[in-house]
Image: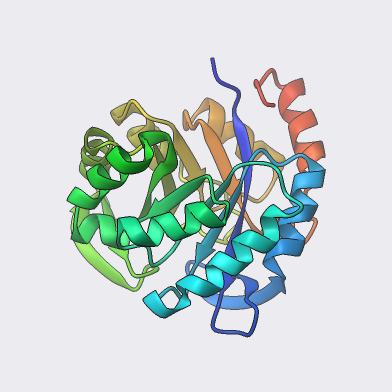
Length: 254
């Protein structure tokens, strides 16, 4: 069995000179937390398994900015780096891979053009393609959103997860919009339903507030990895301490 992963997420606002990392609550109430390459280096030293960069203000003209962020980060960080936001073509992905990214993450472009998932997978390998799903509870189902949570699609998250797995995605980055930034715990129902529906790894995101929440995501939610932001950014939990706790609970972590 593969070891469970702990992944810090860096939401990057590249509209500011040089870029900065921010964090919100339920995709709103954004506040500044630091510089992307500095935080990434800190997490690398603390024992993070991977780093995820998400360009939350992505547009085509910001692609060069993210390339520079990745290049700068890769000078001192030697764990896998995933980059998402504004990737709409093989060429967009290629620029990020050349800068040092190990994986790319797509959401809006995947829903608008599902064939892109297959094309990216065939070009770079499924292990390098992550499909992000930002989902909101609608009672008895979960709806996918795009454009950083600003537009809803009518697409059922469970069915969409199955489809992207079939199209060649190597992993799903699943964020609960209802839990994002709340520290109330991961959405275990959403995570479990998607984890049981697909044959590829699922990263649970949105809602981590204490060590027990990570344990629940792995045991009850059946997640393969967990992603968090503010807990790590504001030093509320150290990655090394979290891993020690999980090992004590007999969770296989790196």
